[in-house]
Image (cartoon, rainbow over all chains, first blue to last red; front, side, top):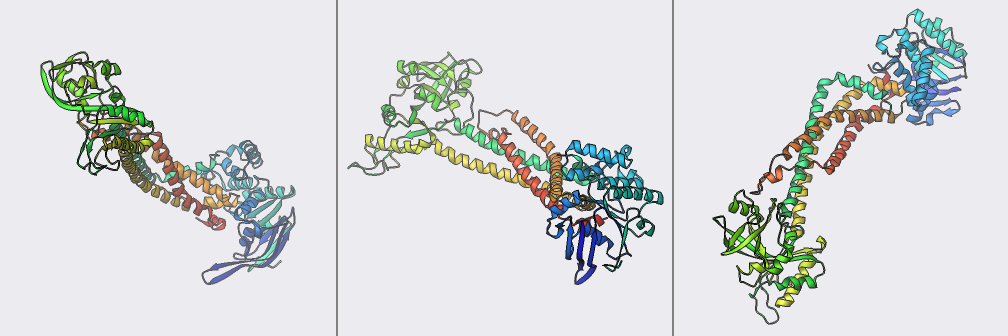
Amino acid sequence: MIELRGITKVYRMGSQALEALRAVSLTIGRGEFISIMGPSGSGKSTLMNIIGCLDTPTAGEYVLDGDRVAGLTFDQLAAVRNRKIGFVFQNFNLLPYATTWENVELPLLFNGKNAKKRKSRVRELLDAVGLYDWREHRPAELSGGQQQRVALARALANDPPILLADEPTGNLDSKSGEEIMTILTELWRAGRTIVMVTHNDHIAARSERIVRLFDGQVVS
Amino acid sequence: MNLTLPRFFWSEYRKRRKKVALITFALFWGTLSILLLMAFGQGLTTQFRVAFSGLGETLIMVYGGQTSLEFEGLPKGRPISLYPEDVDYLKDRIPEIMTIAPESYIYLQVSASGKEINRSVHGTTAEFGALRTQIPQPGGRFLNADDVAAGRKVAFIGWKVATDLFGGEEAVGRPVIINRIPFTVIGVLKKKIQDSMYQGPDADQIYLPSSAYRQIDNRRRINQIHIQPRSADDSMLIESRVRTLLGRKYRFDPDDRYATSFWNTIENNKEGMAVFQGIEIFLGIIGALTLLIGAVGVTNLMYALAKERTKEIGIKLAIGARRRVIVQQFLLETAFVFAKGTFWGFVTAFNIVHLIRLAPISYDSFGIEAYLLRPVFSLRIFVAYLIIVGLLVFLSGIFPALRASRLNPIESLRYE
């Protein structure tokens, strides 16, 4: 499902070049739950961005569901992010001026869903994460755990087969973190592919497989 | 259009009230300027047309003259006069002529109700009324064919003549003495704006049937002939044919420019209209430049908002927004800022124009106020304004919108 072959990412800053990823090859099967671990600067986020089609590799090939990502335009990549991939960020990345309902509704809007379908889907998602009663609240009025649950609901809006979680529990207390991990595990068991970046061995242990990065290379 | 996206903009927009207030005022002022300037510009053009039509619509006047070229053995310097029979002579031979009328005039003493004045007295036919926009006030009429055929001693007088002779009293039915001959007033000219004339404004003239006129002026020749073509496009053709036909009758070279002369108001009108339309366009451009200042302010605001909303844009791009969604959103928001700023400018301009139009115009003298006090707020102006505003909305919004849509999603997500 996700095939990375010899992925290299080089950032250029003036005359200097920084190699964030060096010939990384990785295959993630459908329905797999993997954790990506490594110290700061090891290339975890860069790898996550490339898998999430937010960034493109300098060299190498990324095949997602049999399609080469390198040939896609900006808008085609946006469509892939919208329909195939759900993002959960460490700092939630919710729109501060939008309500819980509106935040969850956005990916559906971008997918061209009509008002009726949007309404029923948002309702279903907010019920699933237990935040329907908080639908008119803005992110600043929610706890960290609630915000991450909103982010999870948003990530699932278009029912994507892949969920990318970048330190999903990093900004949460242990109870809220456990709640999020429980939801992620349930989603994996329901057949979704989960790719999670974490520093936490205890959290990583919940996944099927751990991929360790060091200096831009896969070490185990 | 879903309103979820613009709602986010509103929150940001409100935070910048002070700066937005200045931009709103600039747009208000720009709208007021452009609409008033265009309304006054069109008012000038319209009033020019109205004032010019005071003389007559699509009118060609033919005068006699003096030959300046030798012709068929005849010397130059011969006077050429026009005569009443020339009217039928020309009408029978030029099918492009719709209406034609002779006119003679002489300056005479006129008296009534114990008052004496000196005025131009004209002899003409019924056709003259339509040719020279001689519209009577209620209760009166212009000369008709029977007046001319029967040689009735009736007079159609200008409104100033009526005031000078009868004060505020009813003039119709009252006698006026012209050269010791009594005439009955059958109509008084309705007030009109007139900026073109030859014997003074029509308000000061007295018109008699040509047959009766001969009793006070025994010269057989007439001063001029008025022609209205079937089509304004034929005016130069008619001029040429009149010159040829009169040249044949009175034996002068048709190319002799001094044997007869013409006042072709159709051609004059075209030139005048071109000048006034040029002024109208110029005023519109000045107004548009004023509005442009406001538009620059909007562009700055949108650039600032795009920067402040970098993270928001990054989030939207990350969850699948296409570039056009971001562009549409910024253009919609730009249109909103414009709508807010221009609405009151529009309302104010509309009311100012209608208030100014309430001011009276003096018909006694053709002053500048006749041009300035009749601005026009027409559909044409509204459409031109919408096009200009639409263009400015697009130009103000598109560049910030494109910049926002081209942001790198990863860098935008990291933006704090």
